[in-house]
Length: 219
Ligand SMILES: [Zn+2]
Ligand SMILES: [Zn+2]
Image 1: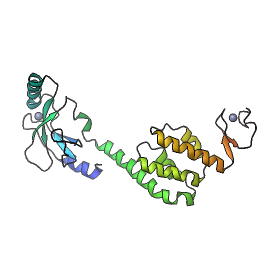
Image 2 (image 1 turned 90 degrees about the vertical axis):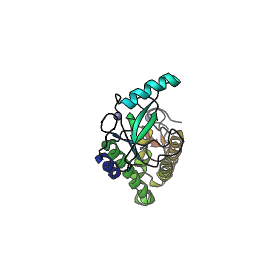
Image 3 (image 1 turned 60 degrees about the vertical axis):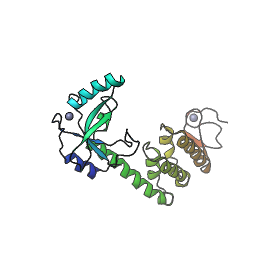
Image 4 (image 1 turned 180 degrees about the vertical axis):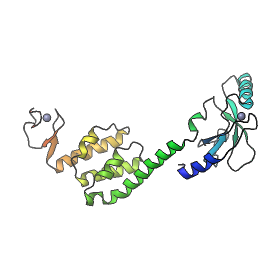
């Protein structure tokens, strides 16, 4: 992942398109080179995103006549090099989504730092009875799935019934994580001689015959 310092360094660089004199946009390099399937060997590319750039307009027309499909070329410069080249692009929007946005990178970095911090705290969360790092990972859909599984394994050990509501109200995109969380909640309740009322979802004693919250009968 591109870190903030690297990102800011590239954003300070000024390069201009020799075909239209537009300032090149700093874009995240795609993981694969369209031509040969190999990586670019760089994290960013400077690209002319001007739709009126002659290289873009002319290649669009030429490819349309030659192959009858909508693709074109944009002027591209690899960092550290003095002259760029024309790169084939699939459509007008091929790179508009990957223009470096320092705000986006800042928030990605902040999220990543929180994930790292939570992960480090997992080692002591059971001893500290601290469910915060466990919850931070389980409720963060962008956190690494392996890290979330690790957090799930601590859920019963941390033994905090107040975690359950937030977990029940969370939409898990990954069904495997959801299943693991459900199993852990079941164990957590059992270890505390509790159950969830099937009618109102409140937590009650496992031997209760009626729910003290909704007064409905329990089996
Ligand atoms: Zn240009
Ligand atoms: Zn109830």
